Structure formats: structure tokens, C-alpha cells
Image (tube, rainbow, N blue to C red; front, side):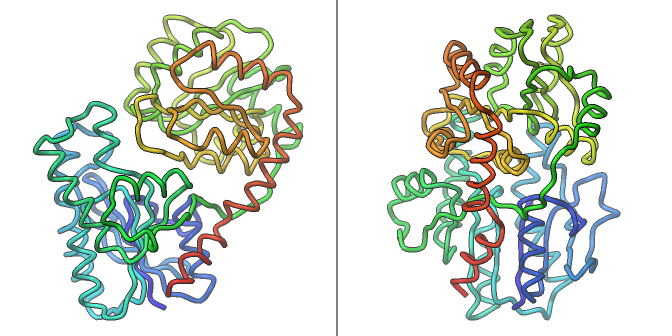
Length: 399
């Protein structure tokens, strides 16, 4: 089949690891022709256009900056995204007929484009990978109010996108329940669980590798290391993360590593510089090669989400922790079902992200637990539930 995949993930290397490129490779390896369409933000427009790399067709679309910029440019860029993608597809792929149209949220601004693509490709199926529920997540974080003009605009886009999708894959059971409850016009029969997934690449840090990477970044070798890696923005509830780090800033029985990038990183670094905690390391995003080695050299993965969320998020960073056989500590809002899934699966502990005392309690439990056994349970759970081959099977079963 010819498969069109629209996404905000602007990876241009088919060999790169991640939930979308792992899926692209899996589809390619099954004999399908995949056309991967993603943004090339202002500043990298020279990389726009159509290329063919390792059996994958990659179409880079010129856009405004959509990340790490001011709210005005980000907002305008989101509104213009649909026309930009549509124009690029008409220009570079005018005669290509598609059997399957895949797309992920964010963004939710593609409903008219999806309708046109389905009209121009009779018999094709459209499949939404729902990774973000917008605009409600923005309402939860206080970015704008429900009922406002901005909310009405994006809510209409969201409703139309759901209506134009033949199938909707959600990340977890709570996602399915939320979507159907708050969108009663959706046929429940077209909504299913299709979680974040990866291509498993078995890899373990040997002692010398662990010693080398921890020493390189001045992380102690003689105590359990808890790592938070990834986005450091408003959705992650960085204020609560800082409170938890402050409460454990000078522990002698464990060490915390926070590494990543995002709008809230300056706030975290300001706390770190003024407090100078002995049991905490804070770093900017690392090169991919170093980051992967660092993660698999740590002992426990940390996941934080803002307590204000009413939507059930499901961060994909869980996958890398499980892949490296690490148990997890999960601090989230009560609507997220990742924590209960980790607890029931025997590979983690969970608390709500509004109580430092509760976090310290699960931290203590983790320090006294058999972390290796918990990590093995998480790895087994990953193989049973979060492999990209399962994602492919779910999607292709509809075509």
C-alpha cells in the first residue's frame, strides 16, 4: 500500500529511534511505501522538500517555528499548518494515490486536509493516533478559558477531526473512556487502544560503560540513581518536581538526575544554582548517544505530570525506562492511568503530583524494593503491550 503519515515530529532520518520512526520502519519492512510528512521550521527551510532515504519518502514542509518560540508565532504557525501541508502534498505528490492516511495529534488542525485527502483517494482509510487531547489540555494548564473564542475555534477543529477519522487509536484505557465520554457523537466502535510503542533493541550497560558515563557527568557511582529525562515544560509540572527535589536535596542514599529541555528548564536551573543540592544533577539535553547510555546506566525512571490535568496523558518516556529494565516512580494527576498500570504490573509506584509527602513515601518504598526484579517485570510488560509490531497489526487490521 501507499501510506501517508502526517506528523509534527520533524525527524528526517528513518533510522532514528522514536515512536513514529519505529512505526514507519515497521510499515516499510512489511512492504508498504510510506510517505512521511513533517514540518521544517523557520531556520531550517533549506531542508524542506521531498527526499527518499532508506526506502522511506520524507517530505519536509516549510512552517513557522512551532516549538521554542513565542506564543504568537506558535499560534499562527499552528493555524497555517494545514494549508502548508496540503500545498506541499499537492506540489510534491500530485499523482500519488494513498490507501491509508495516518496522522497524530498534535496538531488537531488537519480536519479539512484529511477530508480532502479522503475525497481525492477513494476507498482510503484514515487513522488518527491520538497522542494529545487539545484544547482541553491547554484549558487545564490555564492557557485560555473554556468557552473563549480561541477555545471554540480549536474545539470545532477537534470535533471535525474526530468526525473525519475512520479509526482513532488511543494510548490507554483511560484515554478511550475519556474520549467517548466527552465526545458522545463519536461511534465507540471506531475507538480503540493503540498505545505508544517501540521497536525493541536489547541493550544493557556493562559496568565499565556505566562507570564511564556517570563519571563523565559527575554522578555518584555508589548509590541508586533516579533519572528524569525529556521535556521540561508546563505539562510536566516542574514546580512540583522542584518541591520534590528540594525535599530530597541532600540525601546520602540516592541521587537524582534531571536532563532535558523545555520552557521550564530555566526555572529548574535557577533553583539548582541557588540551592546547590548535593544529591541532584540538572543538565541540558544531551547528545542522543550519551543520553541513551546515561538512561540505561541509571536505576529508576521518574515521570511527572501537572496535577491540574483532567485529561489522561500517557508520556512516551515510559517506554525507554521499561526497555532498559528500570522500575518507575510516577507522580501524576488522578486521571492519568499510567501510575495504576505500573503498580498493577509490578514495575512501579504511583502518587498524585500534589503531595511531597506522598512522593517521599513511594521514594522510600522504591529504595527498599527489589528494583532489579521490578525492572524485569517492566521489561516483560513492554514486550507484551508496547511493541511497534502490535501497533502495526492494529492499524493494518482495518485496511
